[in-house]
Image 1 (cartoon, helix red, strand yellow):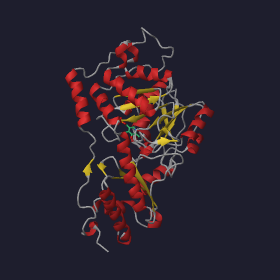
Image 2 (cartoon, rainbow, N blue to C red):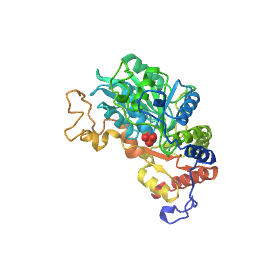
Image 3 (cartoon, helix red, strand yellow):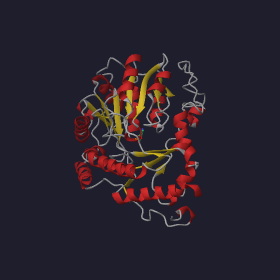
Image 4 (cartoon, rainbow, N blue to C red):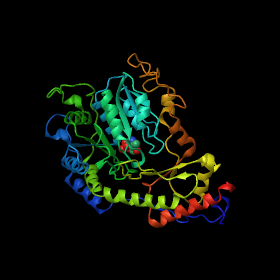
Length: 423
Ligand SMILES: *Cc1c(COP(=O)(O)O)cnc(C)c1O
């Protein structure tokens, strides 16, 4: 049996992986064309034709709407902007509660706080890492206005169950599908089953244009409100006042023409990008699923997975080895882009101290807020255990995972597993 690299042996992976790069001549040509035109953005904040942006923005939107099979695709300068626009568009009041998951990046929850809404954190499902519909149901109060689900790691949340809860309690449903463009849920694209959903186009996602986002909805009224929030709503309400002025404090969330043109080129590559990650995941599954105390990613019923992250669950109790030791050994063998999941948003200082705006505890301290949700440790036991003990992820968007790479990673895992008693 070969010695672990941790103890001076030869590492299983001796060559670094090829960094992921999907930018090619199509994107170069798209960007050059915009630069040569001199029109890097064509938006005007006043009502009129240019309110909806320039040629490349509209082209990209039409292509995205067709691709994801939705009535409206609305592009924005980041998916964080998209989330903020989505929460504003559904018309929440200060103090309203939105139930979301703690097992995500901070923007999911801060988008709610931007409108002085109160994020409430449901626990996650241990198989999919997505928000647990049962946990959501238990947290509904008269103040609940919406559910903000996240299709974490590349697989859709249980939209049928969430839709059903939303309908019974008259809630809106928003889908943060930042990590899962191209994933299917019952043959529909993830993100399109909510009232509003959408995708991130930042550098680390499946397809990207540097920074950007795409909102998708089939609701005409919500689409109009999203476009207003994207582009200085208050500048147009004089000329053409929408009936509902709630939250029409506009921002500048406009995507530039260069990014939109690159977005169009990238959309054509989504299928290839996704299938290369699915192939890597399939190979990893085949190599890793016999290892004791390790569970490879589970597919939810009716779903395809696009593997933004390859999420492994460890049974550290039966393994009798801490995850930290396992990670150190795998790292020494050269396994790239290992991660321990998400730190659980409810445990961030922002929520522990309940201070978002100013220093006096706003919005929780305001008379509009009546929530008694406690952001205490232990509020989401499954998500917390994963972060502290039992989750081990490999980010598949950081490198090109070719066949030889997945085989080397499997070799490294097997070597570490053969030596667990020595760790
Ligand atoms: C990346 C990401 C975001 C933020 O997207 P940006 O385009 O970087 O603003 C939000 N939610 C999740 C789950 C993400 O992975």
